[in-house]
Amino acid sequence: MKIMVWHLGRKGAGPKYNFEMAMALQNEGHEVHACISEQAENYQDYIKNGIKVVSFNTYNGSISALLSILRLPFIIKVFTAYIHSHNIKNIYCTMPHIWNCFISSRFAETKINYLLTIHDATQHQGEENVILNWLMNRDRRNADGIVVLTEHVKELLKNENKPIYVIPHPAFSFGDGKVTPKKINNKTIKLIFFGRIHPYKGLDILIDAYQSLCKKNDRFSLSIYGAGDMTPYNKEIITLPRVNVHNRWIQDSEIDLIMKNHDICVIPYRDASQSGVIPTALACGLPVVATPVAGLKEQIENGKTGLFADNITSKALLEAIENLANNQSLYEYISSNAILYAKNEMGWDRAAKSSIKAFEELASRPSHG
Image (cartoon, rainbow, N blue to C red; front, side):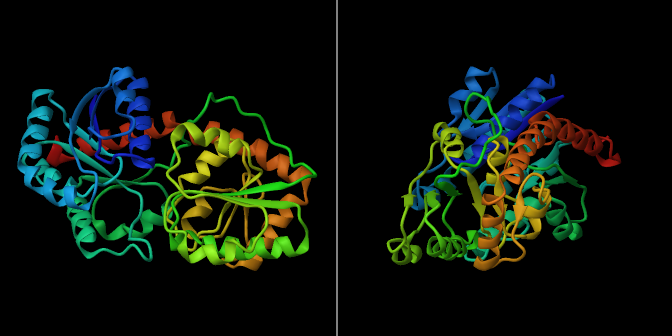
């Protein structure tokens, strides 16, 4: 099967997800093409692995994004010519982009099967954008089928009136792949918050819980890794001991060592369809403590591959962290199970096979036969 994987993001989880899926599909024996940004931080990874690439100069900021609209007719022409010249009938968007709908609107003119991955059914609280929402909804209408990462998102999209396939978020591969179960020590227990700083991520909930931990003893430290606005949290953070803030973009090459150097990954989200941090932590054998948000409940088996707080409060989060930190056998049990679960249930090969089944189903429909 000829498949084009398509994502025009420049850095972060989107380009990583696109590349991992491209590799997995190629490893399954399919002819894979990739449509990516010329600014994609992993551009050379495609070339090194023999994946055919069509790329476009995207943008580096809001001004260049606006100016890029003028180039859309040219981009659409090149994109369309490429898929026709290579006889590609299956296009797999692994993460939406603001240009998508303008390009995907042309797919209806052909017998292309367009599979669109939707990571979030709605915009996160604090991220609402009317124009962006309109663009994303147009792209959804153009899709023949939708991939979601959780049953929770599938339920939210049930009125889309098109096939929806649940393909859970696989575990990203970082480092050399050598992972052993972790043990809790009797010294400082290193907590980590990892990922983009945004209100819906609940960093304030974690900070409040950490403040309470520090009042009880000096066993814990907290590391915060991620780009974003730290202004709302700085006043409280400067009063707390043993807090290390790395408020910047984290390179892929750093992630494996960062995860392995900590003891508990805390996911204190208020709202989430799913989390890409959870599969990464599990693959590193790093036990996760998370708030019981709908989408996250499908990524962790409570008490086996991670631990959930009873509710979305700093008090409940504190209790869950203490429960894990004070129970060495539970900690080691979760770490071992996390590694096995990531390897056996969160592999990219499984995701690729499920994606192929989705394309086969789309191709079998009368309108595409």
